[in-house]
Length: 238
Image 1 (cartoon, rainbow, N blue to C red):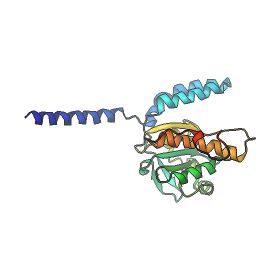
Image 2: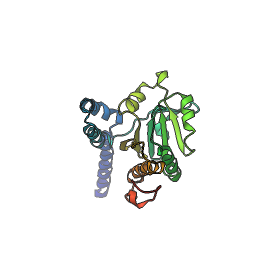
Image 3: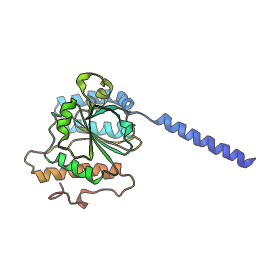
Image 4: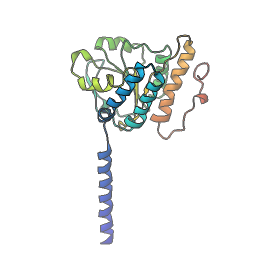
């Protein structure tokens, strides 16, 4: 009898633990609705005063304390063939970059993404999401290798207002989301910028190390912490 009671007690505690975990699961869209208005008010003031350091600090604080740990909504996109694709269809951890054709990245960015997508294709899904038409997305996709999934959302058709408001207009472009297999957001990052005087090798090196840092220290759970100085990328670590 005692063993039977202990068994039922254990089952009850387990079910309660699962219930509490479900209750604490906050979607990205919910976290945005709670914290984005306050951030935007402060950020607009910082940019108006040209206090870019404060603006960057505000973004980092929003991400670290309010958005990280939330779960990405099951947003719907389109493949280059025009088929509907849901984020939850992707089972591996996701390195998601939201982009647009008018965003001009640094010179070494795409080659660095291609190299890392090839290196980690068996562990991570690299996804580039373009806010453009299908035609433009197809054209832009030619710069990326086959290890990268290219998706798009055509804002002009006005069929995806929710995903557009949440992923495009909330945090700007380009923005990178590091998402684990359960769709939990581990980190959100802005793209690498640097002076035009940097050489291709230096640009590649900076982008590679930045992207690899996110992969090794967030998406590859249980792995040893990555330090840029431990891996030779191009000429020298920046």
